Image (cartoon, rainbow over all chains, first blue to last red; front, top):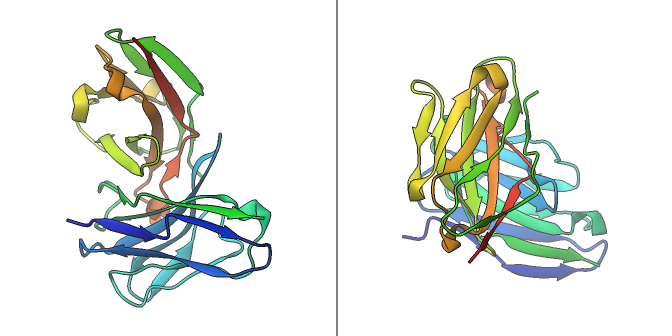
Length: 113
Length: 115
């Protein structure tokens, strides 16, 4: 009963490095999303997808790319990491419909030095 | 665009006391409202949600929330707090419009429970 799986749990990057945060879900959910969580700011939506091949921007998309080639996977790419991207990142998925429950992964803590 | 305000950053209550966490939202039409809880080092878990019908909704772990349209509020309550309720609580609002996929979260309220 895996649910939403995020890897890695922790990552330290140097400014300018690139990396991909992985997210996979085994619930056949159409909707997947990435949030970042910063102290005092709650969760802010980065990107989301309503199905394979369809992605859209959230509230804070700059510096991040996503793709959705399969229903199960929704990776988040940082092309050139900046200290402002130090945060905790959460992937979440749900069935289609705004009133559906969001299932969250356990998060990735990213530090950019 | 919709927004959510949680006025209290921290709240401390004694074990066994009642709890109310405040949430105010800004949105022109009928919103979809949620409360999520986050335990340390974990992702968020849904406590309850409101999208239509009875304005008093029951959730898991003995929590309830009341939707008050006139006050644009969706406050979370629990009659008797347990030490295991210590966590961070997030209110969130979504819409049924084309932007309905953009669930907006409040900044969170950290609950501390005194024994």
